[in-house]
Image (tube, rainbow, N blue to C red; front, side):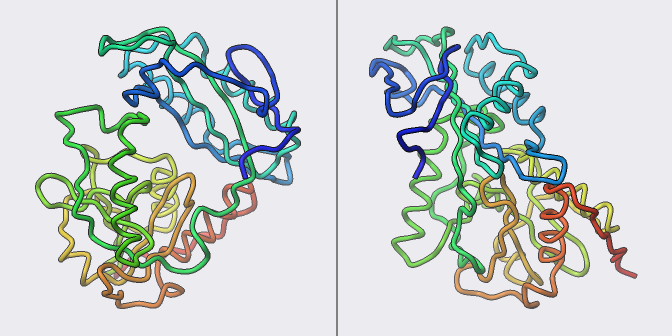
Length: 298
């Protein structure tokens, strides 16, 4: 799925075949989850292959590395240039891109500043199967922001997401909706959350979430449509009386939610802001003209 005999990757200054690439086993990244990464998408447009918000993604990668005391020797510009080379070498236009920064071989719990850069890409057109998600409020909560940098994209943080997703699948759901330590909605296993009510959108504030780059694009699109977006705390019970809901993220893009805890929303997906924003997002990322609708409630 991720590579074949011809796939080229980048590792520490060298272009090489993925099938021939090796790495050491005595790293904090493997043993303790001390690594940072990004998920980035490239799209085929009339102007050629374009990486969506490349600067923002690589700024976040370097920020994440800094929180883990990793000394990355690449600039944002370097990383963007390498990524376009990666796409060209693999003849990819629509692609999912995975940069990973992982430690040198050194065990123990002292922060390791020496690190490695790995870049790969593959065709990953859709994260979830087509249709509306059936979600479950998870028994697992998001990591406490006093315990780690929850706004950094750190490999070890995603153990929490794996557990929440597995629990949801075991109960017959597609994904999990995680709460924070106070019982407010935070995010899904790997995406941000929005819901619609009374002509407005609501999304959890920073603090217990990874503030996503697709999330920020959706908020920009909403503003262009005169849709007010509230960043505030809310409970699952408040979501239960919503008109609609959706997820946002690089992997999921904009994903419809059909129900939470088997409770459906008031409006069909096609009548929600989410469906409109989904179409506008698809046009935006492919650099087509976006038709905005002034939908501000009276």
